[in-house]
Length: 332
Ligand code: UDP
Image (cartoon, rainbow, N blue to C red):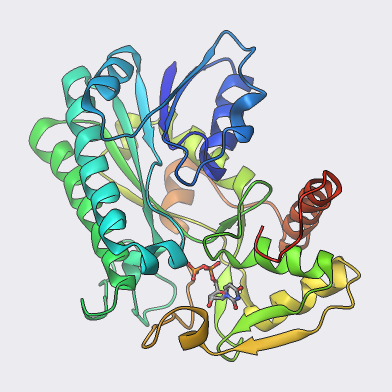
């Protein structure tokens, strides 16, 4: 199978590219390197089954050519990270909505199997824990930039599902929960690489709010396995939405302590108000837990990596980067 990965130089995309090549598929990556990093895919260049284009997903000509060669498209290119979303709301909405629109139009032209990445952000402030794919979505007011991200990804979902219903395109929507692992950058707000960097450099671990908010962290290798299986099952999974994530809940306080323990760090924990960390009026989710029965029933998937394994893999990766001379500012 020839797979086009938009956002393929990103964190999840580069791991997916490696896994597809390892099982004998060929891969084209389309990435404008806005948040992706060429280093993540540079080692794949000698492989004749691998190609890339550094270009925006919104370049219709390039997208058309790449889609015409592809059996499947995994659309991961998006504005990501809470910090970026709050700082650049216009770019976030345009990248997400216009990017997905462009991908779906190209996919329709060549009848590509298509996976569209969405996010647990779409559940918003829902208190119906665990979040089920058919549950109601509860977004905050449009005066808060954060919700623009959720709304843009939700529109992506509607566009994808509409392409399936109206034109029979085999589209599947994946709602990613907190995905972590080597290569994730902390530059745009992701908590695990930030804490690990802080722990390794002896800087204080910056916990936002009271630290009692919780998340479920899933290893990127598990997420990639789910994507591979979904790609292979268009008949049973087209037109469907699937949560992909771990359902082991960890508070941010617990996470900070685990990082300190696993990095053998003398760092202390420092509490920062949300208004200082993001913007005044920022709203955070207290809990975010996926119901993962649907994807388990569809493809037999469950996450296999523990949080401790995840942290050790991130710590090893960040240690190597720091050893290579990168300066540890705490925001890797
Ligand atoms: N967080 C934190 N310190 C940081 C970065 C994030 O305490 O340096 C918190 C953040 O407020 C949230 C949780 O960690 O409650 C997860 O944040 P992340 O940005 O990784 O993911 P998301 O908010 O999208 O779940």
